[in-house]
Amino acid sequence: MNNTRVVLLRHPTDRATPDHFEIQTEELGALAPGKVRVAVEYISIDAGARTMLQGEGFHRQAVLGGTVPSHGVGRVLESEDDQWSEGQAVLGRFGSQSVADMDGSKIAALDDSYGSLSMHLGILAGSTGVTAWIGMREVAKPSPGDVFVVSAAAGAVGSIVGQIAKKDGARVIGIAGGPDKCAYLTDQLRFDEAIDYKNSDVGAQLKELAPDGVNGFFDNVGGDILDAVLDNLAMRARITICGAISQYDNMSAVTGPSLYLRLAERQSRMEGFAYFHFADRIPAAMEELASWVADGSISLNETVLDGIERFPEALEVMFTGGNLGKLLVKV
Ligand code: NAP
Image (cartoon, rainbow, N blue to C red; front, side, top):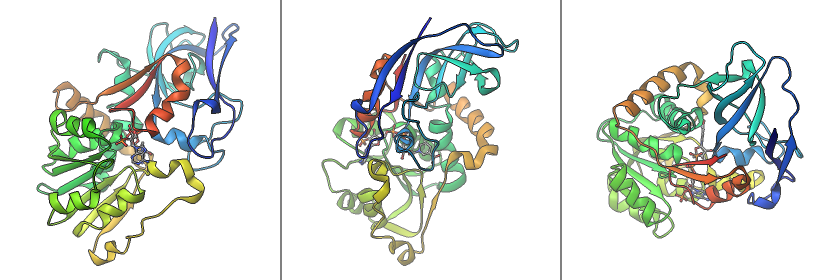
């Protein structure tokens, strides 16, 4: 049996492009005792993956010449561990490859009653739905009637954040790139308003749409968009820093917000989080997200690149805004 894997050739210093990676195929030997062989079906493409390619940083790092780390879902092909049997749906850090030999203790069983296993990398995943839920419930905590803004709103985390804010009774404004994404936010996800940051002045749009100021902002982007929202805060506003994708291509020279003094002027606060800081809340997040999937009150579009050999273009797709909702590679 062959495994096709994505190897990191060199650390990107700017945009991660396909030439930073190589696709290699290797023949797998017999499965070692205690191991479980998994056929990977989907690989999650997360914005944070870019920060794993630099050689150092907050996230665990990809090794030069090694398989690029990533989360995936798949099914057990073969098992030398009594706890796992063939056909079982599983989740794990399989890496960016088609077949993964894993320790039985390093994989988790999945409920495959949702149809596609990809749901476990989207709405029900730690780095997507759970991140949105924890950021909203533990940090952002909007109140009914709040004007609530989310950036990268048509992406994976942002789509869920906005839908939770609507459930919480906020008036939701999404910021996204391009008219199609903005139409998706208002028509499909029922956000109240959307701002196309690629074709309009975000600060001017916020002044028009939120003349009394923004009460809550869930930021996935940083940079100029964060400044534009800082300039439009209501008194006692709350900014949640989930990420800053506009900065990930240049982590050695991150541009901070120049208007941070608005926090003092508007008696406001800014607080960051990573979802695993709230590990004890993950079960509650999963339970409520699953209930929303069951009652159909939440949705997440998927953008799927077909074939493991398309992994190297996936980050480029994400960093040029080519994904609507969750970005996945279907192996
Ligand atoms: P995503 O939102 O599905 O995709 C990223 C989106 O960001 C793109 O589709 C693009 O949409 C936008 N974007 C890319 N480059 C941009 C730029 N330079 N300026 C403005 N927008 C840009 O990705 P995701 O995986 O769900 O991640 C979203 C954010 O959540 C990231 O900041 C990530 O690091 C963060 N995150 C945090 C945690 C945590 O625990 N704190 C966990 C997971 C993810 P447009 O077309 O709108 O530009």
